[in-house]
Structures are given as structure tokens and as C-alpha cells.
Length: 117
Length: 111
Image (tube, rainbow over all chains, first blue to last red; front, side, top):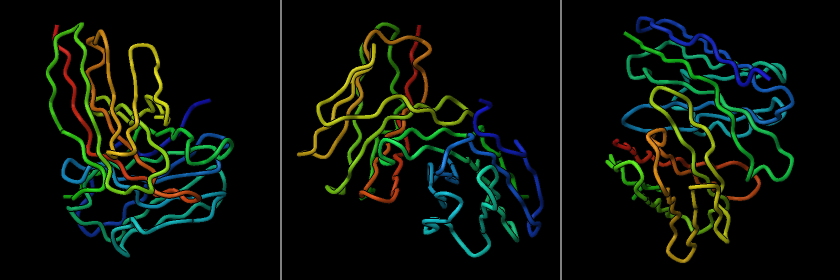
């Protein structure tokens, strides 16, 4: 398996522009997570999906952020309009349910390093 | 008080030594616990889950102390390749994920 795939790996954009981050989870995994990591705030869970349905988006910082999962193999995180304070590494992760979701490993993608100028 | 707290370090440790660090959590309803490892500019990867009875995986030992609300990670015979940031993760409640990540403890193993 190729693991969790994210694109782009790096994104540099200007304030006010729309940014779309993409994620392909591991085939067969039914949970998908979006995280943001910064030096100041560490790793923060933004939103997670179960079977393509958003379960908890309480970590999404503002209405400028939105996430979708149109099918089991694809998810997007969109920021519109972007701001310099959105600069961070955005990780996507996926996991299985079986055996008790609380205890299952999350597999992370390589991340998208976003810089908003 | 943060929900999950870790000493950020860095812990500078000579190769071959034993090192231990803790992670404290504030919510007594926490259900499950993990240690993840993150190398510089890489993604986090699961190191080990932490079970109530404690568990060991090679040179690594994880312990849970529910009474004092902390988990610990012990690394014996440390290797240069153990240099990384170690992230503590706590899942607060049953059913849904409410994963709270610690900020991580940076470990540097010196030759």
C-alpha cells in the first residue's frame, strides 16, 4: 500500500487566495482526520470523518476553513480566503475501526507545508 | 492548565543511556493513550499504545498511572536513531474521537 497520500507537498500563496489541500487515505480505512501543526500550537485536530461523513468539526478554526469527503478515497481541506496565520503543516491521517476505534493507529500522510505571504 | 502536558525538552542524552519522560493529562475520563514519534520535518508515527497494565516493546516501555493521571515512556540503551520528538496522545471519551495531542518532548541522543 502507498500509505496516505497528500498533495501538494508544499504550497506558497498570497493572502486572500484560495488554497485546496488534498488527501487520499489508505484503502479500506474508514476514518479520516485533518490536522494542523505549528510550533506555537503543536498538533491540532481540525475535523474528522467516518465513512465519508463529518463527525466533529469543532477544531476548524473559522468559517474560512471547510472540508469535504465526496468518496472513500478522497478528501479536501479548503481555506478561502487564506491569511498569513494559516501558515502551518497540514496533515491528513486515516485509521480503521475494527478492534475498537479508540485504540487504532492513525497513519499520517507526509503533510502539506503551507506558507501564506 | 493544558489538557495534555509534556516537558518540551530537549533532553540531551548520551548514546547507551536510559531516558524517561512523562506526559500528564487533566481529564480523568481519558480512555486511551498513545506515544507517537515524529522525526524532524516528517509525519508522526505510532510508537506504541499504552495499556493499563503497562507494556514493553524491545527497548521501549510505556506505563500508565491513572491515579496520578500520567503516562510515561522509558527508552533503554538509547540509540542515535532514537533522536526525535515524542508526542503523547490522549483520547478523552468513548465513542467518538476526542484526541488531544501533547506538544511533544524533543530527545537528542549524542554519540
